[in-house]
Image 1 (cartoon, rainbow, N blue to C red):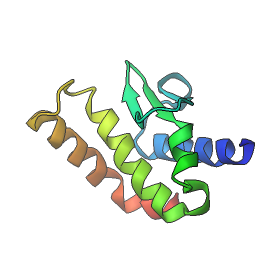
Image 2 (tube, rainbow, N blue to C red):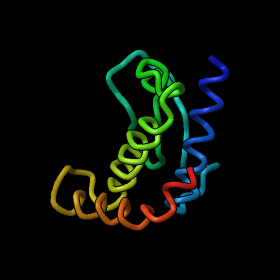
Image 3 (cartoon, rainbow, N blue to C red):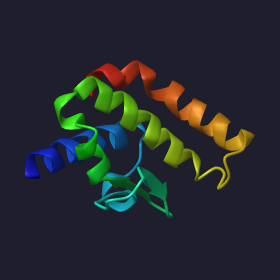
Image 4 (cartoon, helix red, strand yellow):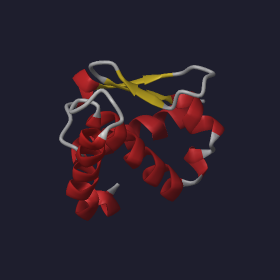
Length: 105
């Protein structure tokens, strides 16, 4: 479990740097046996259990793809609490801004 936690934390730190999000204050890991992948509660929360269940520690490319989209999705909720057009645009803009640096993760 600790190996998965280290990989997950490292991935989230890398994504936080790419998205220019202060990791210590805004990015948190939780572990619950739930369908919740991540949520935005004034900060970003990501579920370690989902990372482990999906075997993302063993499939880095899939992990980077999945969690990059999840990170952008939750980040976009700072722009809009709803899943509306504003949220969609914010999510797209966040992803577009970091794509050139994504291969560094």
